[in-house]
Length: 511
Image 1 (cartoon, rainbow, N blue to C red):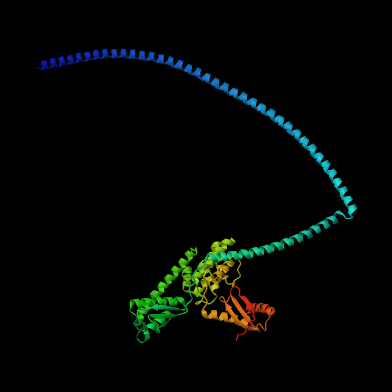
Image 2 (image 1 turned 90 degrees about the vertical axis):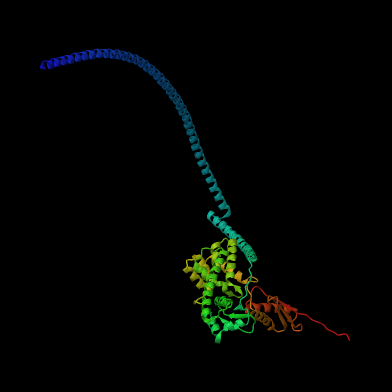
């Protein structure tokens, strides 16, 4: 058994050896074939590389030849340009040389002419000196004396001519200025006319029936006393049907009382507590109305941007009157007039407009504070940062401060025009009658005057004289004397015409 195993092992080993030998022989044969293939491939690659090398060398030689030709052509072109530039430079040098030569010739000629001019001037100076000596010999005066005499005559002549021209210019200026000023004032007044609100110290509140009067008075008069105490206004309850009058010199308090009483009448509940509530609400409403009135007036006058406190105080002028003229309307009217005057006179329109609008600002507080309304208004405006030029217009509009600007003078003029133009203010009947009586009494004080009549609203007075006492010459003298006395003793707007009438009547009766 062991022998069999050994034989088997030997046979296996032999078989393995034979297999390995056969594998090795097969591998060697395959390797030789690959080597030969590789050699053939390398040979073909080498041949191909040599062929490409030859082609590349040929191409490089051709490119070198082409670049050389291109460089030679460019070099030739630049050489041609350089030659042309050299030719141009040479031409310019020749031209410059010619110009320099011409300039030298002109300078030589100029020097020669200047020398000739000097010689001629010297000759002229010699001739002038000879002429002066001859003139001095003939006239018997030296040159200095002759010059002084001539200058003196010329000076006198110029002074006389200047004086004549100055007088002529002054006369023309006065004539034109007067006409121009009248034209400007007339134009401004014609362009702006507003209605007049009549001055009053009494407001009337309508009531539905006379029974309401008793309710307004209240038990033992407590309601009316409460209303008068809360508003500072006097209530006048008389026989006037369906109406109650409110009397007070302060228009703001009178308006507050009117609004409060109107609301009480509409509500029907009237007692002291309700009166106080209504008065307080009316006061707030009136203050709001005044503020709105100030804002509307500023917008109408084109004066926006004012401080709210200034507008609130300014709005109080809605209830302020002066000689029948509403002060708020007067302020707006003055602003329009001032702006038109400033436009005509080339002044600062905005300063004139604002100064004229606020010139009576102090009237809204002058009954509460000591001082004139012009200075109070200026102080109030200054406190709320109003332009200093506008403040000056306010404080100077009544000459309490000397006006130093054209705008301040224009505001004065606008204020005067608005207050004095025809129809701007209404006089009370009593004052009007007194003015006419004073005018007539001035004329009747003269001897020989029979009667005197003021006509045309006091703009003319007719004086009837006794013909047996006053003759025609005396009538003329009387007219002059009456006019002078009126000027001295009375104050009046515009002018007053004095007409003296002397007539003789012969009367007979046929029987």
